Image: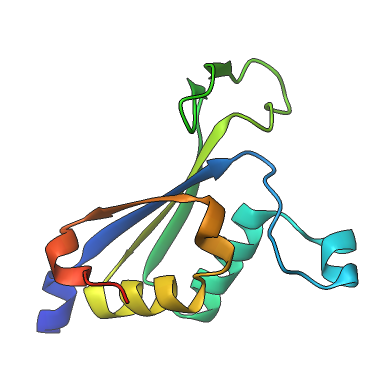
Length: 119
């Protein structure tokens, strides 16, 4: 097994349910402007080893009030997490290439001493 696979890291990106991606063209905003879907698609395009989106049952972002996910369609204040698992090099590359999209998200790095400094 490749020794680089033993050195995997986790990045968690938190944002609001249904949050829209910034900086998209008119047609992109019209047809597919969901930040989570776009970040997940970019992870696949960049061959990130593993990616998953988790929708919280309850929580809050940016010290806002608690949002409870009690319906089929959660509130846009409900937290969502995109978790990426891969090597530090691939995760750093992903974060750098998607920096503009991630400007309004909260990013948590596990084993961050390997990834930072980001820029």
